[in-house]
Length: 328
Length: 137
Image (spheres, each protein chain N blue to C red):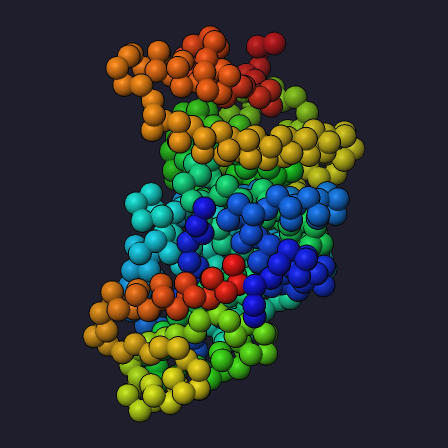
C-alpha cells in the first residue's frame, strides 16, 4: 500500500476501517496531528472516557480486559489506549499490556492501541489525548485510557478522563501512604483489586478511614473491591462508573471535565512547542553569568525577560476535591 | 520528529517457549524500537489484527513447536486478506533449512534460526521495516 495522503487517510477513517484509525494515531504520534484533528474535531464529544491508573503490578491491564468485556456485553464499542514507559536510554519500549487483553483482539468492535510514553512524565504519552479524540471521532462508545504504572504524583489522567479509576494493591503501605499520595486525590472510584488477598480488607479500611476524615465537595469517591482475573466485582465497578457518569451529567460537571481535558491538551501542545524552542535556545545560553541572569537573557528571546524571576511555583493548584473535616 | 519503528513480536499456537521471543523483544527495544509483545498462544488472526491496530511496521513470529509450515502461511494469508501486505513479516525458531527456504519463497521476508547474531536481526529489521516506513509515511 502506498503512502496515504491526508485525504485518503480521512477517507479510510470515515469508512471506519481500523487501519485508518491506526494510521491516524501514528500521524498524531509523529507530530502530524494538526490537520487531521482539525478535520475530525467536530465529530468528537460523544464517547465516555475512563482513566485507569495505579502502581505497577496492581492489575490495571487485567482490569481493563474485564471492563472491556463488561462494556461489550452491553453492546458498546470500546477503544483502549494503553501506555507503557519508553526507555530513557534507547528510547525503545517494550509494550506488554496486550498480553492481558488477548481475548479482545479479534473483536471488530474493540480497538486497542499500545503507546510508549516517549519521555513524557505524567503517566501518559504526549499523543494520548489525540488518540482519545481520534477514537471518539471514529465512533467508539467507551474509551479506556490505562496509564503507565504510577507512583504518587502522576495525575494527568484525571484531566484527560471524565471518570478516573485508581487501582490499589492490598498490602502496599499503611494509612500514611493512603493520606499522602497524590494519586489518592484524583480518584472518582477506588478499586481495590486482588480482593482475595489477605490484606484486602485492611486496604479497604484504610481508604474508608481516610475518606471519613475528609469533607468532599461534589462527588464522593466510591470504593469497589474486585478480582479482575475472575471478574468478581466488575459489575459493581461498572455500576459505579455509570453512577459517576450520571452524576457528571446531572450536575453539569461534565462541561467542567470537558474543559479540563481541552485545556490539558492545549497546554501539552503549547508546552511541546515552547520546549522545542527552548532546547534550541539553550545551546546558545550564556555561561559567563549566574543562572538567574542567564535564564533572564534567554527568556528575553521569548519576550519574557522582564518577568519576575520566580522560583518554582509548581503547577497552578487545581481546586482540591476534598479537604480535612473542620477546615473550611 | 522521527517516530520509532514499531514491531509486533508474537508467539502462535501451542508453543509455550518464549525465552527467544523475549530476547528478541528486548534486543529490538534496546535498538530503539517500540516492541508490542502479544503473549503466548495467539492465532494468526489475533496477530494480524494486533499489527493493524498498532500500525506495526513488522511482525516477528517465533515458533519452536514444529508447526511453522502451518502457522507462517496462515499469517501470510491473514495479511493478504486484511490488505496489510506492506507489514514486513519475518520469523525464527527451530526451523530446518529446507523449510526456511520454502517459507521465504512463500513471502516470509527472513527466517532466523538458533545461533543467528542479534545484530544481524536488528540490522534486518531496521532496514526492511525502515523501507516500509518510508513507503507508508
